[in-house]
Length: 536
Image 1 (cartoon, rainbow, N blue to C red):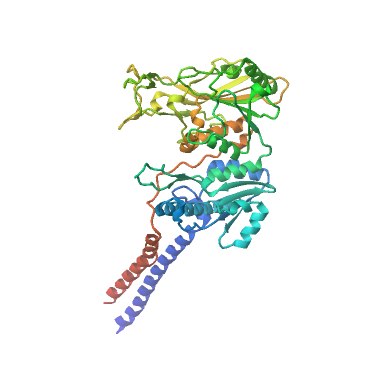
Image 2: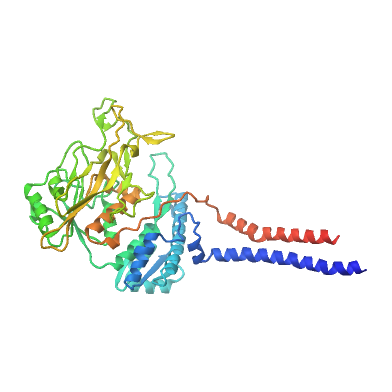
């Protein structure tokens, strides 16, 4: 009888233990699920595929730090629409439309989450408002009228507007990510589906926020009249993306025909000389040099190798202690197929060279190092040489360096890309393909500056679309020429190979069911089993 009396409290005590264990498990699961939804938790433990819950060091220091330094605040307002139903008359397949709609929703979700991190990390200096344009109709109309974007929202198109006072910068949702759309196939082929290659929202937002912190609009003039590629040229081999990058950075653009104007106008802050196919006249060279040496001009030169024409631009950049070579960085040989045209070692696969070294101390390249690498078209690259002995007052440094070990040619499974020269002797010489220089101008506060790039292909749309770091380098170069070192580009995040395979909403629901109900249920059953076994 006494043993039964003693066992009853023991059973009650065991039952309380089991109930407490089950409750503790449920609290831990619920608390973890709740914390996982908090922006501050995500900002500290970022395991997202595109690292969208943390801000890079560059954003923290150069954007949020600049807002704090200037005691400024900005308003970021996002206007999002729901994807429209598929229209057969649109010329796209249902699968293509659904894939694009899925990417759009994904970009909207990523952008919402990223904006939340900006608001938390900025300490209230970045105010965020996201409008559901299909549901918050009146609020959307009022905000659109205040920002003067009614016509743009009438499309409808998803926008992100960054504003401070009367100034504003406008982004479309497609500026927040890099979407790959396969080329239209030949007749009878199947249209490939688009996919989101990477989320670049932080770079886009930080660049616009930073632009609002800087006053003044530098003017860039493109030299024309020598068969240069026009700034408005479109297509893969056009300069449209390069032009758009400068406009987004806050530059004003124009053209200059020195044969007609005769003088570089005072309004010109930077002169861009890009791949002229005909030589400049002595009068043009004299005027540009006078503009540089007496007025503290700034010049950007991009000249690649071409087998048909060769234009000597060294008279323009020589005073900076920088010269462009006349032969490409590789050795051209005759195509063994008998066509007689020069190719790279006769190997058609040898197309690109990787920049193995970016100057870590120069403002243009110091934030582009690490895993980030520039790429140039191998068949276009010219060596850029910096004089070993510079005149007093002249400063010149290489910005980007390559060597044959980094040239993409035939691939060895163990060593990666390799390069085999025609003579069979492996060259080890390093080549500089970009340099920057400056010198003091008597009687002027500002220095004359130049940036020289031994490639014109690097500016073309297909290269900027393929390699984000190429765009960052070019934008940084123009910001440095314009004395806007605080505007040095915030680079897009490097993609991290820690992504999980995409799961459907149905599978996500099943996973939640298992995590929140099945596992706790098993723990409960185990506890009850222990209870009844001990009772026996």
